[in-house]
Image (cartoon, rainbow, N blue to C red; front, side, top):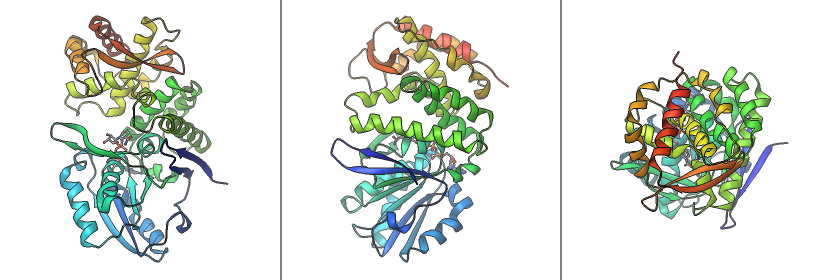
Amino acid sequence: MKNRLEVKTESEQTYPVIIEDTWPGSEYFPESDKLLIVIDQNVARHYGDELSAHFESFGSEILWYEVPFGESSKSIDQYSRIIDYALKNRVRRNTPLVAVGGGVTGDLAGFAAASILRGLPLYHLPTTLLAMVDSSIGGKTGINHTTGKNLIGAFYQPELVWANMQILETLPHSEWNCGMGEVLKYGCISNHDLLDSAEKIFDSPDLGDRANLKRVIEESARIKIDIVSRDEKESGIRAYLNFGHTFAHAIEAFTGYTRYSHGEAVFVGLVAALWLSEQKGAPVSAEPLIRFARYYKLNTLDLCSSVKELVSLMGSDKKNLTSKIRLVTLSDWQNAQIVELEDTGLLESAFQYALERVHNPA
Ligand SMILES: NC(=O)c1ccc[n+]([C@@H]2O[C@H](COP(=O)([O-])OP(=O)(O)OC[C@H]3O[C@@H](n4cnc5c(N)ncnc54)[C@H](O)[C@@H]3O)[C@@H](O)[C@H]2O)c1
């Protein structure tokens, strides 16, 4: 019995999210003379032979495009190269585009799928923890522009999301921590039990406790599905997924996107957002998250002298609709809400608290 979840969007489109230890069989794809595989270069290095043999067994011609690893591939240049490759190889409107990789490949290939011939059927095979629990679900696709991240894109839902957990075996340790930032977020906004299960994964970030890992991926995916199914285009509760992220984006921008990974910045942001929620009267505390500082091993103390600058960067977050700072807090564990704040002093204190408490360098 497959672990099958289902996304049903407001526009009544449905697609399965399947978490398995294998690759999807031909029965999941429409009949087509070609298959366009867009695959992360590192994933191709580890699994290219296995995957191409798998897809060749479907009997279709395989078009194979490798995306150089890294965020810089979410670019107009890569987008345009994929389009050139697809059109020169005469894909048709029914040619499935299979995106195999993390969030970078998924977002880039998803946007290409959305626009080639006004839309090719898209199949996500996420290969990072972050992509399995977050980016492959919900239909956000896109690339970066020189003026900012994710500024060009489309909402475009896939036909299938298939997570082969086995592939996480080769995921670098730093990438586990990245995905775990989102798992901790789900633990705060939706299911507090995830925090304990997450700790077991941090203790052995490999496929050791397979049952626990599967539970965590499944529950995280279920939470994301629940939220995006109720708010496909981010007009309301989908913003809850930004819990901790407004703080995180400011930290990433201030440190030039190089000093911390996104997941590390999210971890600091979650602590700040929990502290803020408590100050605003919610019966929550940042303590249950502080214990994860020993896994993240971050050096953050020097940023304490820059909390004013960090808060001013929060003000320029593209999700702010007014001059007030709009962010997500908890009214209680598992209950997120959107608030608008003008009290920059309180936000500075939230940064100060988080930067002091998570500091735990190796
Ligand atoms: N669409 C959405 O809703 C959404 C949500 C969250 C994040 N994102 C986007 O996701 C991107 C980040 O995604 P990510 O964290 O998956 O990073 P990523 O795609 O850059 O992958 C991280 C690294 O792991 C490597 N890798 C991937 N799978 C591997 C495997 N199984 N074994 C060995 N190496 C592997 C990649 O080559 C890369 O070097 C960002 O661009 C972000 O904006 C999108």
